[in-house]
Image 1 (cartoon, rainbow, N blue to C red):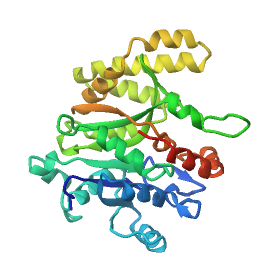
Image 2 (spheres, helix red, strand yellow):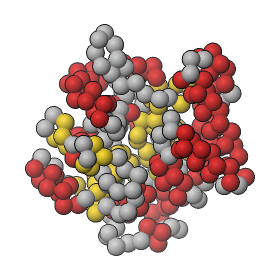
Image 3 (cartoon, helix red, strand yellow):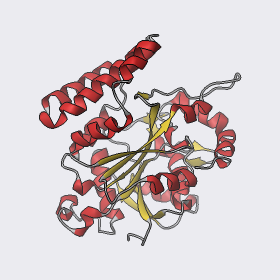
Length: 316
């Protein structure tokens, strides 16, 4: 199934453990401009020059009905499992061209261990083919096991509220060189990770403005052993800088974030996962705008055409 010189892609559209609903339904199926959110993501992936085959993991019957309704072909559908990480494993096995009953871990130590796949969530309808290609082209999967996409606050400020128009205000990672937002795109060779299970924990605790989640991640890092000491330092500094910024102390926030440079992000994440990690910039912004709450989704609905047109004029 792996296309020569192209990377296969997985869209995660499950609605079980740690997933977020919109309007009491799986957000993958919420319609925007006449199409479910996951269809927007699929279209961007299929139109990207660097993407080969596409896989969608979620409630299979609903996905197949939507694909047929919107004329989407050449998509492999995999029934969702119990949580995000199990969905990812099943999607990765499918992206390798294996049958659904093949166990993920049975492929460890084989040639499949060296094959990367692109992973995207179902709720980033402003994703563009150009941003997908930019992300893939900027990664180096010969030297790394995992590439994580980020976008600068300088880029995303275009999507903030301005001129009386609504916008999306995001929480940023504060590092010495920049303010960054994860752009929801991943490329990984998961069979090469020593601690793949930690991705599930990070996903469940992904809203770092919630005190309980901050504490959970802190103690997980603290008790995970020496391999995470560097990651713990990065985590503490990031949280302190964010705290000071959100409580009206920008100068103190800048002083704290000067302690963590951009490259330390990859080092901290790599220590947590037991993998060689690369952090990669993209410069469009659409991938970072996830519709994971009703307020942001309403803004995306209102400004969708305007923001799509804006991105079409950008160059990487």
